[in-house]
Image 1: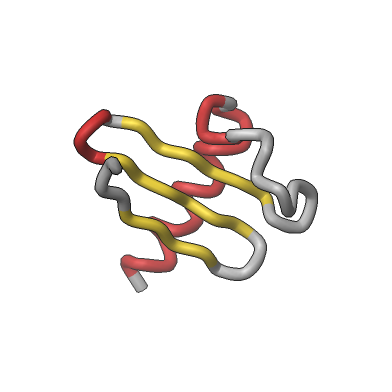
Image 2: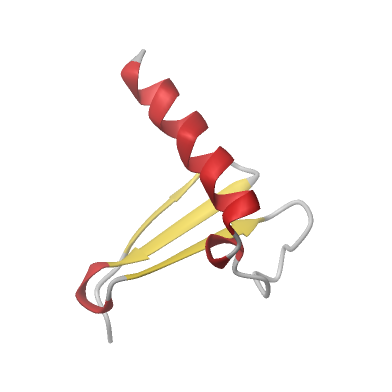
Length: 58
């Protein structure tokens, strides 16, 4: 089993697997079965990560 850390805000879910340097990002409203990893699509991943970083800075 690979160690991981995850976060969900209700709509989005991020899973990070640091030992294998992998990240998964899911839109739980549109993809409740977590089939489409949006972390591999910059158009989805970058805005989400930027918004979370902005929130964390406040």
